[in-house]
Length: 458
Ligand code: SAH
Image (cartoon, rainbow, N blue to C red):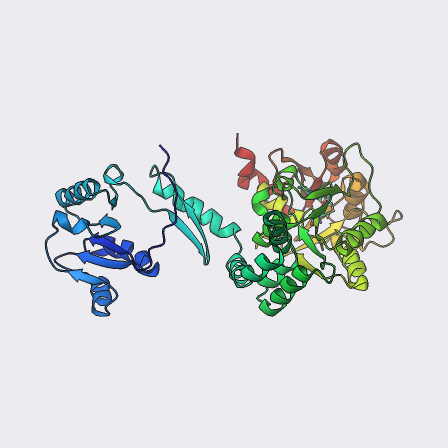
C-alpha cells in the first residue's frame, strides 16, 4: 500500500492530541513548530507539556476524552498508553472523517508522519509507508549527509527574489532554466560559504544577464576506488559539476556518482586509449571554466600526492580562475587499510615514506640510504615496473633481503588482490600484479596475514 504524501499548512488550525506524556510530547513539538493550535486531552501532563500549557502555547483539556471532541479539529493524534482509549479515539475520528494517527499502531491510523530532514525552508520527508520506521530513519541519516546545509540558505534567497524573477521572466520554462543555472553556478558556492551578499549580487547579475557567469574549478580527490571513501565535500562537488575531467585511476563506482547530465572527459590513460597530454588537460580546464561552467578536476587518491594537482592549480591561479581543493584518501592510506597493513606499528615501523618508482632513469636523484633504513615502511607508488631495481638498491644499501613486502592491486576495490613475499623476490611478485598496484616494503607488510579483513568477503 502507498500513502499519499502531503505537506499540510497547520498555522492556526486546531489539532487534538489525546495523551500528555513523553510520546505525546514528541508529537506535540513539531505541531507547535508548524504553528498549529494544539488541544491536549489528558488527566496528567509531563513536565514539558505542562510547561507549554503554562506558557499558553497549547490548550490543556483536563478531562476524559469524549467522542465529540474530534468534531472541531483538523487532525487527531492518540498518544496514550491505554490501548482501549487509543482505539476509541481512532474510531471516533474515522467516523467524523478526521485524519487520525495512533502512535505505533499503524492499522488504527489514517495518516502517518514521516522522518524529516530540515533545511528550512526546504524540508525532505522520508517514509517507508509504515513498514520500517528504523529504515526510514537510516535513510534520513543518509540524506542528512548528502544534502548540503547551504540548501536552506539557497531556498531562502530564492524566496526573497521570487517576485522579481517572476516579473523579469514571465515564461515558466525560462524561469525554471534560470533557477537551474543559478543553483548550479557560483551562487551555490557563495551560499555554502555564507557569503550571502555575494550570492544576492550574483542572482541580480544573472537576472540582468549583464556579465557572463563566473566559472570555477574544484580539484577533487576521488580516493583509491571504494566510493564510500569519498569525503562529503567531494560528493557534493561531483554532484554539482557541469564538467568533470577525470583520470583513468578514478573508479567506475565513483564515476557513477557524478551528476548524470555532466559532461565527462577522460584525460588519463585507459587500457586501450591514449593519454591526454598535461598541456591539453590544462587547456581544457581553462576553456571550460572560462565558459562559466563549474568544473571538477577529479583525480585518483589525493590530488596533491603524486597527482600533479599543484601544477594544474598554478595554471588556474595565473589565469585568475577561482578554485578550491577537496583532499582525498591517497592509495597508501586506502589500499593498506583494506589489506590490513598498518603503515606504522610500535614494534616494527616508527616512520613511513611515500615514494614513487617513477624517478629518473639513472637513479641518481634517489637517496637510497634513506629508504633502506630499518623500522620504516615504504609505500611505493608507480613502482612495479622498476621493482627489480628498487629491491636491488634497497638490499645494496642495507635492507635485509627477507624484509616482508606486499603488493596491493586495485586497492579498496571489489577486485583488490594482495601478493605477499620478501624483498629479494619483489620483481617476480610485481610481474604478477595487476595495475594499479602499490608496493609496501617493511615488517608491517607481514601483518596482512593476520589483519586481512577485506579479502575475506565473498
Ligand atoms: N594521486 C594518487 C596517486 C597517483 S600515482 C593517490 O593519491 O593515490 C598512481 C599510482 O598510485 C599507481 O601507479 C599506484 O601505485 C597507486 N594507486 C592508485 N590507486 C591505487 C589503488 N586503488 N590500488 C593500488 N595502488 C593504487
